[in-house]
Length: 122
Image (cartoon, rainbow, N blue to C red; front, top):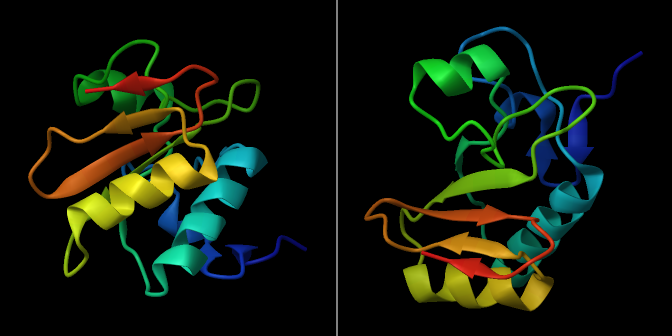
């Protein structure tokens, strides 16, 4: 039996590839960091994009080595978090605090976070 929840606050369906293929390969370490970020934020967060199968990633123009790109052998480590009613700087600060290496802040409606080993900001 497959469990519905990836963590206390997130369902696997929230991480699924948007093409409908059913891909939900996401790094457990990345999920743990996202869960910690959610707890520290103290409010629900919406995930706009998490894992992308290689076909969907290519179709939408994602980088060939995108942190979103997901296979069983190389699970996604990335989440695009909708800003919504949150303060963008709070999301960024907490993402740094929980240890996300990649943080994309140039977007107006979301913050990209990923669990790459090195620090990257854009």
